[in-house]
Amino acid sequence: MKDGMNALRIHGGRIDLAAVHYPDAPRPWLDLSTGINPYAWPTESVPTVDLHSLPSPAAIADLEASAAAVFGTTADRVVALPGTELGLRMLAALDLPSPVRFVVPSYATHAEAIDGAVPIARATSETVADGTLLLANPNNPDGHRDTPQRLLTIARSGAFLIVDEAFADVAPESSLIPLLRPDDRAIVFRSFGKFFGLPGVRLGFMIGPPEYVAEMRQRLGSWPISAHAVAYGIAAYRDAAWIATARVSIVERAARLNAMLARRGLYARGECALFRLIETDAAPALFERLAQVGILTRTFDHSPRWLRMGVPGSDQAFARLDEALGGG
Image 1 (cartoon, rainbow, N blue to C red):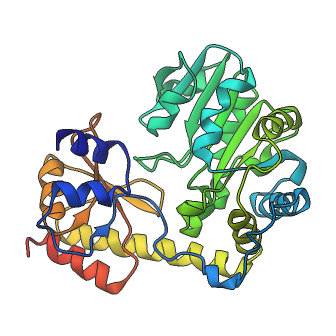
Image 2 (image 1 turned 120 degrees about the horizontal axis):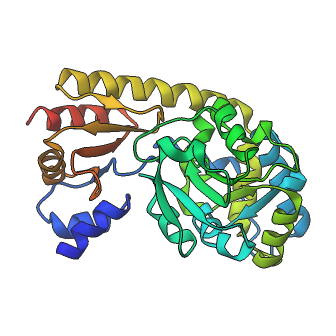
């Protein structure tokens, strides 16, 4: 049981472990432990996916071009990945300059991506003028958002910059990608699953200088992603109307959650609309109370006063959370 609780603090989305640890909690669980859009892009928009053939290089190139148009760059600087998690863990193979530093707090994967990497506070990141610096923008779990201009200054001041933009689709103005030149020493990762609400598709992208893109492409091989990832990715990135509507609705639901929390004496922080961070001495007790009624959130070993909460996706989910926060 203790190992299961530790796992719940390390990663979101572990309803299976929560159900074991809280066997008497009512079903279905309301999973607010992730920052995944609960209103997923409609996969029925792609009625059939050819699973009898390998994805063609032309189709993968089409996907990368479709994503590049949304990211604000050119297709030659984009390589599709079977999820950004794998891409981050392949960074060690790219012969990046040492020393490697990563900004904390942030994703657990950042600490594990490159052996020997050293954690640093965000406030000191502007002083890094050598080696490699890895950070997230918007950051997780605190939702901090750097301006792309600040990040561009770091990238052009001597350090090789790696930015995890897993949550940037909600706020494209926060993205560094449109400002980058091909010779800038910077790599950016983008996630498909969080904004489009389809993490099981396992699709992400690395955007960087052509030589690093070519190296990553060579290491991934000829068929790095599935036919589903290709088909859904092309259609979703070309669905400009859905993207525009989702950006508005996600922000509106985050504001609704902020208001609900405030009525209950809880105040959210951060600038990422796919999740809210609550700082309170009651965070462990609040996590426990919500779990007992089948609502999963996130706590953190490194910050016991933090509770991160995804944004509910329906009136019913909002009502269920509101009742639980009120002790009902």
